[in-house]
Image 1 (spheres, rainbow, N blue to C red):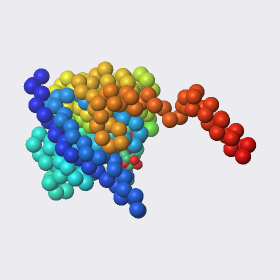
Image 2 (cartoon, rainbow, N blue to C red):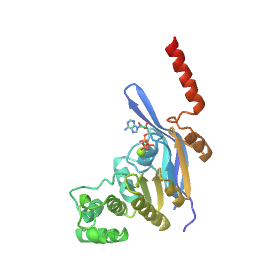
Image 3 (cartoon, rainbow, N blue to C red):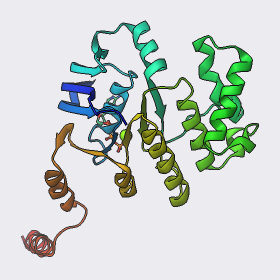
Length: 259
Ligand SMILES: Nc1ncnc2c1ncn2[C@@H]1O[C@H](COP(=O)(O)OP(=O)(O)OP(=O)(O)O)[C@@H](O)[C@H]1O
Ligand SMILES: [Mg+2]
């Protein structure tokens, strides 16, 4: 493996969404260095900004302020064409919900993104077949998504993500809709891609994913925090009221009833 220089450099990244009178600070000043050939797992509670971060990294959305450099390329200064080229060349994106085209077979789903890369029909089919073989689905090439299990659909999505040979794989809860066994197979597949030299960034709630990680990133309220801060915050479960507080609540209720 080559020496781990910084591949992705994020500085003072902000992403805000304006919702009427409210401003949602989805990312609120993120600084992050992700080394080349690393397997980075991003953890954080619902709404902490994980998907937002991944979408910005993948060039699927625009930053509000701050900078993202991928191997020196500044995403925030790219026009739409440059960003489209960046997405096609550098990024393989994997979604929780697979996002396959339902009318297309597995082979067609994988070969489809190559249309925009100026590759002939025969070469596209050959490469798609080879990628399906790599993910263990050579005997499911003609199946449509509804004729595949969830785990198989996600493997098609992984094959599709590899089609333009990107240096970076971004996956947003890729095992979130899968049973335990199929989820583990997807983790192993992502780990193989990492060992093959790609930079992998995965958002996941599945604790098993961290076994494959070389780097962990913890997000809370749009900010990166240390593991200790993250653990401390996770120990507080707002849905579970501690015994002391419960008796206080009872007393309060009684007092209210009395008065
Ligand atoms: N397009 C949008 N418009 C307005 N607000 C948004 C939009 N996208 C995300 N948000 C808000 O930004 C915050 C971060 O959202 P994000 O989807 O990044 O969270 P997440 O960490 O991926 O959560 P989950 O684990 O539930 O997927 C949330 O408060 C969300 O409501
Ligand atoms: Mg999300």
